[in-house]
Each structure stands twice: as structure tokens, then as C-alpha cells.
Picture 1 (spheres, each protein chain N blue to C red):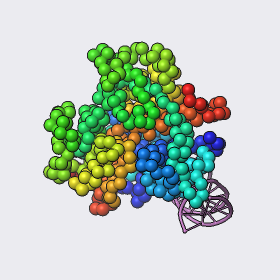
Picture 2 (cartoon, each protein chain N blue to C red):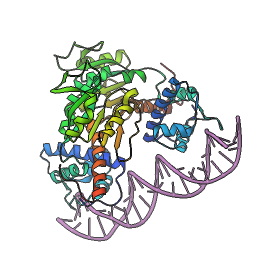
Picture 3 (tube, each protein chain N blue to C red):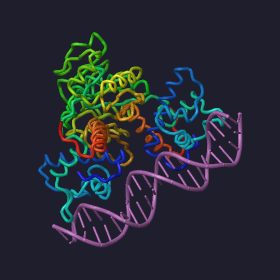
Picture 4 (tube, rainbow over the protein chains, first blue to last red):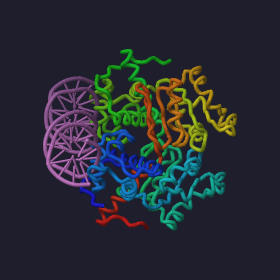
Length: 222
Length: 222
DNA sequence: TGGTGTGAATGCCTTCACAGCG
DNA sequence: CGCTGTGAAGGCATTCACACCA
């Protein structure tokens, strides 16, 4: 894999995912090679950026030719760790949780939610897709038996830290958190929080400040 | 609002959201003031970062005292544009779409999904929560009548661009896209893509590379 | 000519450090 | 003494520009 000492910045890792997504589209369209510039255009960055990002991990391109779509996709899957399947445990089978269980986009990228948990007795035992909801008290046992390394938190803000603690105690190494609070995890565990409302606020911020620029005044409530 | 010419970087805007979220928790706990250092700790950055971010928009703190929780929260809501309610139109009432319609986290932050659309005749007319799903062909009309400025895309990758085009044609100014493709929008429209699989890949990247550091070798498939 | 890989340069964000106020 | 606001310094990511290859 020929990595270069320096760790990749978070933004670069995100771009690698985008490159891979684009490469998979190209592969489906039977495209066999692509230049850094066109790959960059498709994901919204420059060609130089693409080359720098990839060069960090090895030599994948050929001067005068470009990058081989298939090989580069395979390399990116190895780099991102998605060249094999990841079994994942989800806690919190409410609206969002059950939608995530049924979400097809995870499977296509190699992520399989292989067990789902809740603490509400009314939910335990019901099926979401083909998956039976289990009692959260069995979490540690199930995770260890199946050697699951990834967890998804889809409970409310109030219970998120508690669930995170339970996950790390059970040996989970990576946590994707959909609760709108920052969670604390021990050294060695990776967590990432997706706050859907924050995503919308990033947009409204731009709208409001675009308006201000145009009109030279803060926007009143409509 | 006393902005300073320079536009806030995306990362700073995201932190503003996090500050606000934390301030609302503090307010619920009847805390009336907070120092930049402790606010930073709660969201994972330094005190200096907090002060720099806030100073960009005005003077909110008092030397020797800290920041007034209530006032700062109100100021951040104005800055982010969430001091008033935002009506939002969602397209694609599948798993994810219907979960988003029912998601409580949006309402709490002032985002109300006030109409939902689909093109599948089997879905049109059904209720999701208290909202009736409408025919997507009525999108433009509904959006204009209700002066809706925000749109959420919850369709598949293949239809996302088409939906985005329809939204901008209808006058939508900001788009939150859950389809795993980058969408192109005209100048003046703000879009932001949330790809759930990418979030997981950020985590697996760290896991794989943490393993490599420890063992000095790439990880084989298990 | 078209394209990669890469040192150098640029620009931006973050951190530092401190004056000044409560 | 504690804490903010801020210029200056530092570090890091992106862009530039070019040697080199097909």
C-alpha cells in the first residue's frame, strides 16, 4: 500500500470516498480510464487535489494516460478498508434507526447492519426488514460472539452517551452517532457524529448571509 | 449584527451550530454564563477557537465573566438564520424520506417539513405522520404558494439531479441532499450532500490505519 | 500533446500570547 | 485573578508549476 508517514487529513479521507463513489459509477458505465482533472470535476475539486490525495498512498496513474478505473477503485477500497464486509450493530430502532436498517446504500458499500437493539419492550422482537430487534441487554454478548467492530447510535440525545459507553465496553471500535450530542469515547475508539439539523443550519447560514450581502442588512423574520 | 467583511469558513459555521446546541443544553440546565474554554471543551475545540469564531460576528462576552448563555444562544440563532421557522419540502418518501418527515430533531431546531412529494402512485395520498404525500408534479405550485425556500432530496442516486433541477426551477434556494451523488445547482443556490456511507468509511479508514500503525502491515481480509 | 507526480509557494485556519477589562 | 478580544505566529491543506513519461 506504500503509505507515506503523514496521516491523511479528515477532508482528504472524505474525498477518497467521493472518488470511489464516482469510480464505481464510471465502472458501471464501462469507462476504463480517467484523468485527475475529470475525476476532480465530478466531485468538486481540482485535478491537482486528486493527484495529491492519491499520491499519498502510492502510484496509481500513468503519465499521458490517466488512472485505470478498476484498479484505482480496488486500491481505494483497500485504503478505506471497505474491500471486505463490515458487520455493524445498531442501537435504537425508532424512526431513524429502522430507516437505517432498511437503507440500501450501506449494503452497496459493504456495510451490513447485522443486528439491531432497543430497550423498549414493545419493540423487542419485532422485525425490521428481515432483522429481529433484540433486547439491548444482550448487546455485549451478541457483539462479541459475532466479532462486530462498528456500532451505530440512533437513540435520543439523552441516551447517546450511555449507549456509547456500552458499545465501547463491548469492544466496539468505531461509532457512527446520529444523536445530536457529542459523545466521549476512550482513546483508540473512533467516533463520528452526524447531526442532521446541523446540515440544514449550514445551508440557512449561507442563505441568510447571501441575503445580507445583497441587501446590506440583516434579514427580518418573514 | 456587526459582521466582519470576511466570510466564515464552512468549518466555523459547523462549530457555531455545535455551540448553539450546547448552549441550549446549558439553558435547559439553568446555567446562565459560560467561559469560552468550557464551551470549547464541550464541543471538542479550544477556547481560543470559540472566541475567534464568535468575535467574527460581534462582542458577546464580558472579560472576567464569560458569555451569557441566553443572549449568546439568541445571537447564534440569528447568525445561523434559525431565529424563525423554516418550512421545508421533501421529495422521496421511501425509508429514509419518511423517517426524516417524522424526525423530531428538525422541529426542535426550527425546521418543519411542511410538504412531502413522491412520484410513485402507490405512495401518493398516504400519510406519513400527519402529512399527506403529494404528487411530485405539483411540486412547483405548492412550493411557490407556500414560499418554501428549503428542499430535502431523499430519492435514489439516479433521480437526484433531476429532482435538484426541479427544485431550483421552482425557486428553492437551499438543498439538503441524501442521495449518494454530487448534485449540480446554479449559482445562488446552496446545496449540501450527506452521504451516510461516506460517514462510515471515514471511520473504517481510521480503524484500518490505526491497525496498520500498530502492526506495521496492511490488514488482510478477516 | 496529454497527463502524472511532486517540490515550492500560496493562502487559510488554528493556536499562541498578551493587553485590557471586570 | 479570570476571562475576553485580537494581532502575530505557526501549521497545514490546497494550488501552482514544471520535470518527466507515454
